[in-house]
Image (cartoon, rainbow, N blue to C red):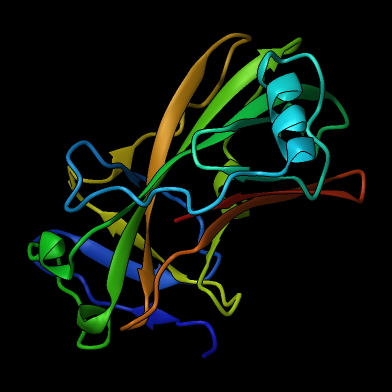
Length: 216
């Protein structure tokens, strides 16, 4: 099955938009504070090489190799541009904190179209920490998060403008060395499908870095 692309209308003072690779604007649909159901648990342990890469990168010292596959909760550290288009980089430690299955009824206060109402929502929480040595402006990070189903298809991202306590967070304008923040986004799986991995990918000087967290 291919990618879902959905657009819903404004209603009751709230807007819901679902589109592949859509970017966060205004209030982000962020991190779950009380899950609608239990969190997805890792179904397999990472390879020894992946574990080694994650441990080494987690202290902000070494950089996690592109292509590394981790389990939920394991950190990866990458060289990330200090701001969009900059040649300067700082070390950014990224962690897929959780992937939690919700229910479409969680969004009853939003005006969703008929197709959206048949989907399975997943709340994906990511953590970002500036490991140094330079301050950064992290505004471009969220266009780089993809969630896939078992077939490898990208799930549609649902942007909610309004208050949604189960999945919320704000992207700061600046992130000083040592500072961190969490953010969450809602992704939609077609009926009968589920989120099986979360991928963080980006380019610096045409060189691609790609880190994947496998779900349960």
